[in-house]
Length: 448
Image 1 (cartoon, rainbow, N blue to C red):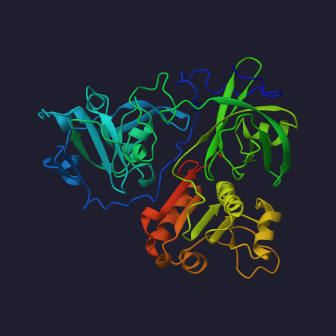
Image 2: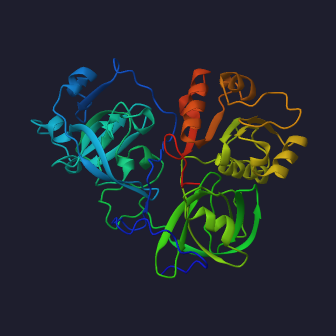
Image 3: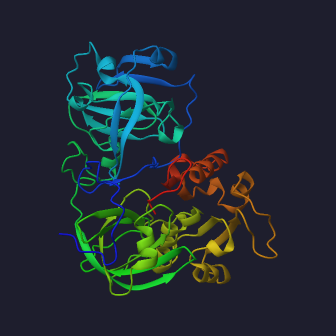
């Protein structure tokens, strides 16, 4: 049973839309990817179907694929990170058409993507008008950050099964783990109704706000004491649930700002967003001693672990500094085993999070080098004009690729896409670039 959030009423935007348990409504199209976005030229794109022994059964290049009959399904999207987007319109080729005439001795399929992602799916979930290889969304060619040129679309399952940048299917007689399975995150076979998150039950816990302070004019850090907190890794996040007196609730996901600790205290930093219902409450209404429902920790890819000893490159855009600060704090607590560099892009000096802490890191020899990039307004006497991160800054202010650093990039979608391109163009290994995006392709977000 949820607790009542004092002073919260909510907008009740999801009243007319039936959502699966725990989901919240979004009007944009958030982007979630484990690494850099692959850019596949159409003259090099192909889609194949292979058997368990990797023998080729069917192959299409882009031209022959686009000559196949298409369908235009309108479907609801649901992400395992809890957002739902109803009534989306796509164009693509049905898996029924691609598999027609094949009689494989198979019960499962592994979908493979450009960029190395893979996900396993029961073969029955691809049949009977339930799945497509989609190449257009909302009347436009599918954007690369959403999986273009083409992605697998299985709307009856969470989107982690709708593999982006799909390049082929492998038919299998037995179940094998895909990308998330190799990270020890369970598969999700069932439909949205009553499904668990990432294959495990993560229960809600009621915490108490024991400290809060403003980071900027629009951002606040809250410290919540959570009984029986199971611990977390730097880079993970929590879900926060607010519930009104009439039973209406809203859920949002926020990165954890604090290093792992034994006191059961979790810190989040929330930036107030326009047209949101949760962030204004957390930044303007909630007070000392108020209760807050948290569920987590969530996430196993975008994390830093104390045993890592390679150079670490952190690149933040705006509030993307939050999980990266958790990594810096965790490193300090673990005894400074690896060298960190932080490239922090922010619109103006007044918008910098954790000012005093970052200043202390820069002044003292803590093994954390910090470079600021101001996009709109620079401090008095600043040596560089306002501008964005570019190839030159990546070349001069980040670890050389020859040192094989692990790069963590967090920020708005377009920021992450741009930084990824600069990193890969400068020679960094795509497999050593980990990303966390928030927001739609060109808009704001309700994610952080």
